Image (cartoon, rainbow, N blue to C red):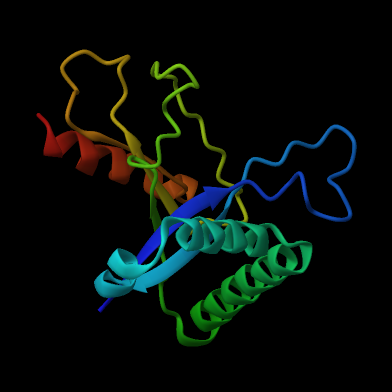
Length: 163
C-alpha cells in the first residue's frame, strides 16, 4: 500500500502568460509524493526532501498548470453535456474545513468568503462553522448555488434541521 502526502502550491506566480493587470488569482494545485511505509522508512531524509521539491516544481510547472486547467475545463464540459443528454444531475462537493484557509499567518481565525461562479451551479463548498452566530459551533457552513425558485424550499429544509 502506498501512502500519498499532498501539499498545496500556489501556481499563479509561475504561470505564463501572467494574469492581466488588476486580476487576482487565488487558487492552488497539488504536489504529491507517494511511497510505501518501507520506502519512507528506508529512504534518506535528503532524498525525501528532493522528492518533495521535485513534486512541487512539477506541480508549479507552467505546462502542468495549463494541463490541469484544460482537464478541469473538459471535465466540466463532459458533466454539463451528460446532464443535457441524459437529464442527469451532477454536484461537486468540496470540503474546505481542513485546509487551514481560515487561519491567518499568525494562527488567528479569519472569515472565508469564497466566490463560486454562477457558471458552476452544481458546486457546493463546505466551510468551517461561522463564529459570528453564537450557538452554531461544531457545525459547517455550506456555500452553494441554486436556482432562485429552489431557494425558499432549500432554506425551509435547512431550518427544519435545527428547530
